[in-house]
Image 1 (cartoon, helix red, strand yellow):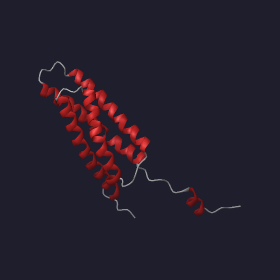
Image 2 (cartoon, rainbow, N blue to C red):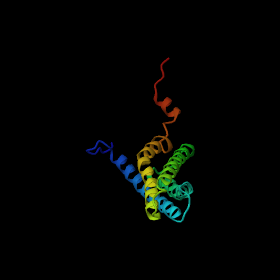
Image 3 (cartoon, rainbow, N blue to C red):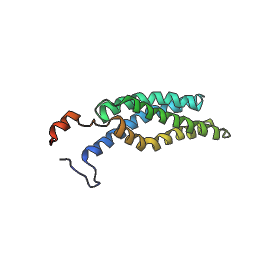
Image 4 (cartoon, rainbow, N blue to C red):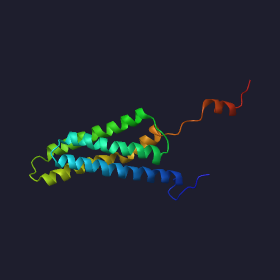
Length: 155
């Protein structure tokens, strides 16, 4: 029997959420650093987004697979989700880059565009958790033969 907390969530679900959050923090730090450095040194926002995405995607997948859910997930849904996230971030950072062009300070431009990159992933954080939990790393349903073996048959 699972222990239920005051919030109504099982201890296992809270632990899963904490592990997902920790994995996301690691991937975010790596990704954010890669984005800020690329953008600071003059890389176009869309290219900086792609570099940052690659930098964060590897630790994110490894940590989620091994640490958070403890099992291999379905690769196609995972790929669609993370590429969709990257495309969203690329659009947001490109638009932000366009909007900040009148600002003279390169430091401010870097902070604002990097902030838009971070904000995009902050917003997608919960969406990705739900999609990973329900689609990518979902526990497989019981095998059909096990269900049939337990189900009485009437003739």
